[in-house]
Image (cartoon, rainbow, N blue to C red):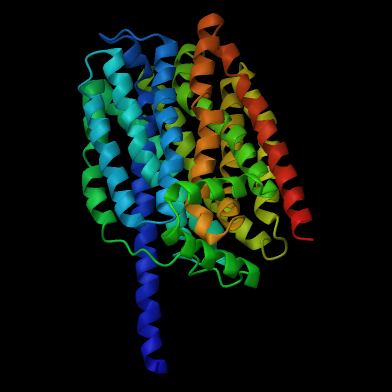
Length: 433
């Protein structure tokens, strides 16, 4: 091909990659807005005509995450073999409809079923999007790319608190679900415009042996049944020790972050005596600022350190999380409002530092043809062992004692996550020698 033809082609591809990152990141924002909308509505639902207990309120998040967790492996297998944009579009449309239906619930059971159904749609999106992004951008940029994509977690979560708190206060909890659900249908249509590049198209540093495995996996996906092929992939992932320890650490991290995110507005209201609307906005502001800064800083720091060590992403994540642990403890136990605010800001900033690096680690530790499955297995583990359990466990302990005592579980989980990531880095170093 003549040299003058290569520039437009490259420019066109970069524009497509940037467009894909923008669309997927914006969808992820609505993903987390929807997920933490319920947290902002906890007290309103508790005192509504539904009259929910704390355990029932906690089960709304747990039911969603249980379905999300159980369906993720199926969508992971499909994501490694079928059209990723079409699967993502299906997922976005599915969760948007289920969110809107939550506003029509007339009983606890109806609301529980609607929130559980959201998990089907988010499983299709959450497992496949990181795999698609890894084929849009080269490995040297993935820490930053994942940081941009996962910046939607704090921003979307904060908007969930704010939208839920504001719309709930002025128009009621039902309208909050309608406002959160309807825009997703337009985003589902945009997904169909995304490109679906070949798996591994951005992995130029694969060893000859890994390239052979990728080609063999591509052939096997056409010649074997999806069931047997999927089973072999998941067995191989479970034997990958650096990946396995990374995922287990991520599960402990998600247990902590999920429990904190779900119960903090209620904690601020009950323990700190802050009004419902102010509690959602205060914690929302902390999450969006620290999450945005921490995620971006962590992504850039991880990519910079990765120039000098293959274990950099895991080392950065482990160090930041272990340093955060004492700040989480003091934020939840101190009687001083000013000390609480300082400790919570520092803790959240440090916790969000690991978002980009740890997700870059997960896609880098496996073969290109395993990435959707690897993310699916990660999703299964972090939610089954993490935030599917923590809202309910904290709620149940709160019913038995108090919310002030129940939240002390969180800093323990933070320490466990840091230690597991440090072990994963050690295991990766051994595997490369």
